[in-house]
Length: 384
Length: 128
Image (cartoon, rainbow over all chains, first blue to last red):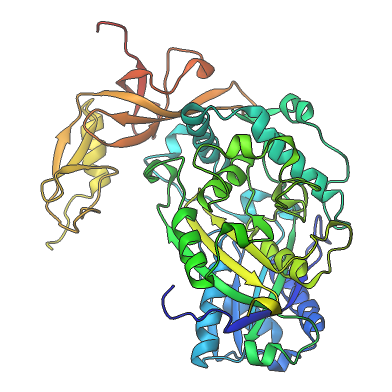
């Protein structure tokens, strides 16, 4: 993104709201507000310091109005861009632009969802598409299954390789006290689980949980005076390739190729420089596609790449250290949690799952049906 | 651009009512456009011509949906010989027997009731 300056802004406060299955009649905005409160505590700022308000949820038509009213603030800068689960990576770039321009001094990015409590159909109403709906695709899962079928056909990717992604995520989740899944998982168990959308069993598909949270950003200058070490925004990149899966140009190549290139260019880094990857794993194929498109292996080699525990705890490349959308939490628009985990890894706050000498992190968001891709590269103080 | 009297979807459905699978051709881009629109996504031109597909295509991607209730069914993406792609399903074979690269032929499906007809596909027999 032209105009954004490497390291000009930083993430200074992060927090999850209640996760999993939240109290009855909690609203998406309740969870946003809870996330904001906890993120303010995380960085030592006060509600009155927030003059930039950014949020997205599938459950409020004008969530910016709802959250501003709820918090009792009248923000100078507001953005409610909604492009699916990657919205929050777009928000980081927009917040950085606003901070650079002086449109605001402290921006909060918030999310909330109660899809588990109220049911997915109520949380995220699907639009009727006369060119797709008659064929009864279950979206988004059918779209990702189509992409997986293509990857398997072109590159020989196997169901066992997809399962290896789910197993790695589970192994990380067992090290995360707030992860939804608590039991070990094996490749045979993934393959033998209930078939949902071939080639995906229920274990290839993300969780359906409630959850929310908030991320607070400010200028690099101000970030240095706050409670915890800043996670500097080193690079941002974004790409939109389609809205509906039948319009995706090539089901094996995502916009992460372009968003990653932009982010690396701005960050002046390359894949080998990245210490930890938080990739949007709504489905097992996602992790494989994004490892390829973000340059960690060649196109088509992602299946072999994830074998033998390479991305699991103890492997050479730590990926989805919170347990991912597959095993930690997935309230529908998961991107915010990738930013939270990346920041915590850079701060060294992750306990048993902490990646050693972690100074650079990628948080890569995916939205829609592989439609919107956005990459954020964060760095600890030594990188700026 | 002039006022649109009949929407692209209405025209598409009118062709289907007659048993024809229609798509648009963009003379300025020199390529097919699908789904039907009021302007060409490659050039921005509002000059789009309607053409009728010969109905032959190749399976580009395929999946089997296993619903909670009811029988598993196929959802596929078909690359038509005229150069456009659409979502559909392949019938007359088991859903898991639908393979990428399979040659298929258009057939009109009339669901009945208030639902408009839509295009499905069947395997193209060898030599047909």
